[in-house]
Amino acid sequence: LAKTTQPISMDSYEGQEVNITCSHNNIATNDYITWYQQFPSQGPRFIIQGYKTKVTNEVASLFIPADRKSSTLSLPRVSLSDTAVYYCLVTDSWGKLQFGAGTQVVVTP
Amino acid sequence: DSGVTQTPKHLITATGQRVTLRCSPRSGDLSVYWYQQSLDQGLQFLIHYYNGEERAKGNILERFSAQQFPDLHSELNLSSLELGDSALYFCASSPRDGEETQYFGPGTRLLVL
Image 1 (cartoon, each protein chain N blue to C red):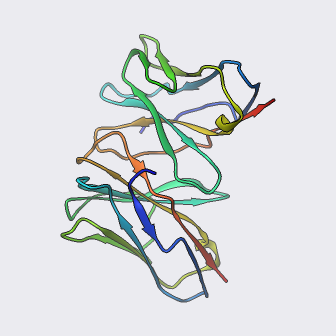
Image 2 (cartoon, rainbow over the protein chains, first blue to last red):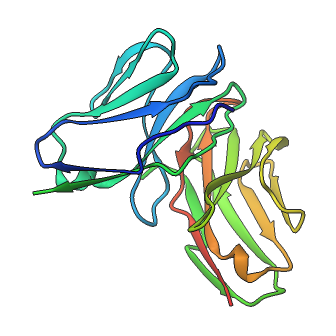
Image 3 (spheres, rainbow over the protein chains, first blue to last red):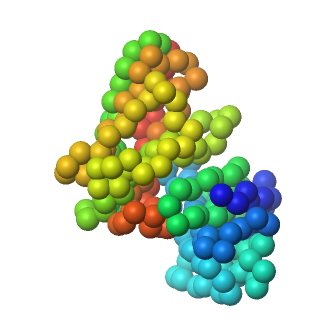
């Protein structure tokens, strides 16, 4: 599995857009990029997944450049409840997830 | 609510003991995954079962074992417990073998004294 690198923490104010960039230089051809959110003492929650270009759902957007060596999770207009740890993962066809340290996002008023 | 249930929510036991953690996947999901989350190791993949068969192993100790039953629920057995086994244990499920999206349960918090 490709190793991922993402910032340890990010701070933001309510209503701002938060962009978290993750690098995955060794991503394989068939790997997907997946982001999870985790609140303290809760299980991770799936946010978004993509293979290339741009993916958007009701909570986030995922931007993946052509070389797929990085990806950016975009959280529009964050609120206090978006304070959590965000994990970037590269998932292979066998479903095995390898979590890194994640990015602690803190949203303040 | 992900639809994945785990019991018990909390478990306190002593070193050397054996415990069983239970997981019920979302309705219709055939795959079950187990993860361990501790402060110093983060979230670690332990093992994956699909429709009753073991599919992949991660950082699972020999003292730990798991199985998936015909009704698709799964159990993780932890034996000869050590202080370092204290952690949150998560179960996740997905519809198929190798399905990329996994749905996590609320976890079982194990404390070994």
